[in-house]
Length: 618
Image (cartoon, rainbow, N blue to C red; front, side, top):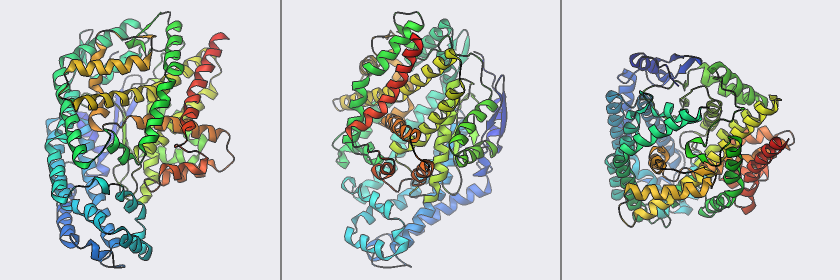
């Protein structure tokens, strides 16, 4: 499929100022307005904030370093509450600066000027953060009883109780100040450098299909085209380019896995994923129970569904590139942007007008970047920025039904980020396990709203199939990714891995999760290379499965709930990072530590497959 792209200079201008980019068949696609943060990379306000942040960081260190034990005995001026308020203000300012640099870079990662700007800003922010590093470390060395008494006595300190309680969980894994500073400063030339290498390599990749060199998003999208030949050509092109760049991706993977192993060893983490569990504020046992429940369900979910799909497409086995192929019943027409917007907002409004009002601001105030273009970051994300500003959403919209669901997903994140912003910069961040709740719930609302309107049996079958596939991609595929990461990081402890070894680990988990109805042929062994989560956030992926199963259970409660569910749901979102998952789920009668919890979530996927089977028989 040919895509029309605006000229790069026009994109660069639109990205700074906001606006819209035309795309044939899709209408005007919005480009985000980063000028809400700063007018340009060299804007006087940006330069002034950089200078201000640097001075504040030095002044903060001079004022508070070595004095927190004494501050914990005071109330009001000179107390812990005052220190935390100043620390939070700096966190917000530094976050705003870093977000502007990052969003500018991800709008066009192929631009050398953007890369230099991003790298320079990151380096300066790391230097600033080195002056602030002492604060959390020193606060954790103050006796717990002294800090508890301070929070009870001083309302200013008590306000930050959830953050302080959360901080203490890191205490067993803290190093001394000098080592922590070394880890922080060296990150720029270790993990951060290899992350950037991955991003820039990915942005430069081109995939030749029928004589045309296409960016990855377009090539991947062709795997959802109805013509088998198109899908096969796209898969061949993807495998060829991944294979040609295998050496650099193998080096990146080996380096980052070793970097993480060094950090984990120094900090004393027992399991290779424990640092992620700590960051997510979720117990290892809960994640293990989720992974085990999903793996046990492979035959009932992915194996069963793909066998059905192979039959529908008249094949004994699906090729790996046919996994997301549309059914013959699937409408082929592209969905214009205005229709996608209306679909999502109407679904949100049906649940709660406030939810649609917040999501509507992303469209009205130019907080979304939608067109596919060379150099733009692949995939989709919602970036929270900081509470004093507002979130931004990036999608690569190509008019497919899945793109509408992606829009609903990212806007769910955006709504969550807006609502949680009231907690302030230190407490608005939601652990990843709960950060996927609003996004997956937004998808579910949109899907259910569309399904209710669909009376045609063939269209209903296509919609149900696509939803099942999305759920399999979110639950089964992500747990397979998690198991792959575990195998890679465990094997890396024994020595550097070759591309062939990594490919074998990849194929082992893919074969197990996808089942016998999927033919995994030559070329697929390189497809681990393009998954950004493995690079940017090791072991992030289980959060998707956690969120999907949680939302399935949550949606079942909603369907049978008395009035007031929406209020409880908004309370959950507004809590940000101030409460543990057990506390947030309790009002809904849900408990993620209960082994049967995951079975309930997985049963909803199984129920949709049952419905598909019934439609097929009927």
